[in-house]
Image 1 (cartoon, rainbow over the protein chains, first blue to last red):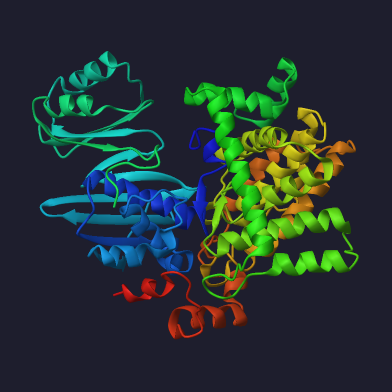
Image 2: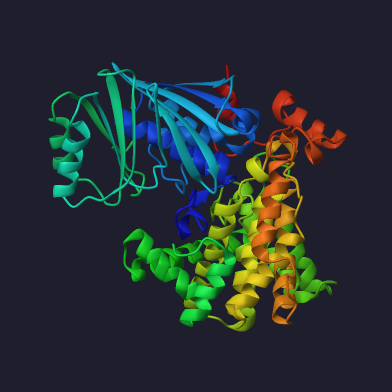
Length: 229
Length: 309
């Protein structure tokens, strides 16, 4: 089921004018922000399909940047997000993307701070709901409707078992899981949708598992996450 | 959720002797793992935002970022107060309230997407005007929103609710169906009557294209919300009178999927066809994106151009 509950139909509470082009775009921006883990220094935003055709009129640019500032969809600062980003010294570039896309409303964000980069490709599928298709060259899928754990690691036997053991001990239920690897025994990314919030301790423990390179939490379920701008 | 179709929804509600709104609240709490009370509170708060958007649209300046739209709700209200609307006061008020919320949306104000922002005026238009008329409390209206949500949930999972995928029928059409079904329940209709109201309403918007001028959620979206509120009331009245959707509502939803899937891209929110490509539509688009001078800027509207390559 693409739409899981009543609030994906009635809702979100949002600043207009378009749930696909504004609210969904805020959430795509926020996913990139949470993956980066901090305020970006620069961001390149590529718009595809209908996003590319109409983003100015819908304030999709304002919305994605609002998301990068970790604003929620109903934050009344969204109309001024570009000004706020400018004041914070964030460099922002918009481009029109070419090539085949999974959905008419798709954006790709490459956000950078220092050595860290988060690249997210996601589509806005209606009503403010999104589907993430790719993270840093990995083909993974998640909706960010739930707290989502992203674990960057090396492909090795027992990795999933190690992860699920920690989650199960903490009584965290897994809603959906997606894994992609760049090659046998190469770099891999495991994405886990969970039904409940994840503690900092749990995330630290996952980070200490053998071959884990990085752990990120994307949690758009609260009003705030990933540090405030 | 224990249902995938409107028929299953009506059967479950009738078997368990529950209205759709009550049933959906229980299903929602099971799905989310949160208390019914918390889920009810969230929807109750959403209803307050809807009422605030109606108030704002009827009293404040709703001129949009583009300067193309705004204040039509207030025009309609003045007309109602001083004249005799042909559709009657009740329908005209629902229409004005729906316009009000859509205009708040177009001017980057706060709304609830129902199911989308493009169609955000229809449910508040119907709900807030009917609440005033029938004296229902906010709790009743909140259950009504759960009923509307249950209907939308079926439409969204069997067809679509975004203009980019299925045209305006998927947004405004779905919202009218949701409002019509919920209104039927609020007026005391059975779940099965509510489901008939959905089918009746959806049939009236099949094929409606998404052709926003300049790509903005303004022309024709705002007036379609006004019309939508009136149509929702009409569909609900037909269902309460015993009119049935001979083609079952679930089959009508499949038609919406079929029609939307074969709709050309130019009629799915790309501004490449329909009203957007009329001589006047094109002229407006030129002024918005090339000339730039006619664009009234609100907030950081001007900054949007500055960061272009």
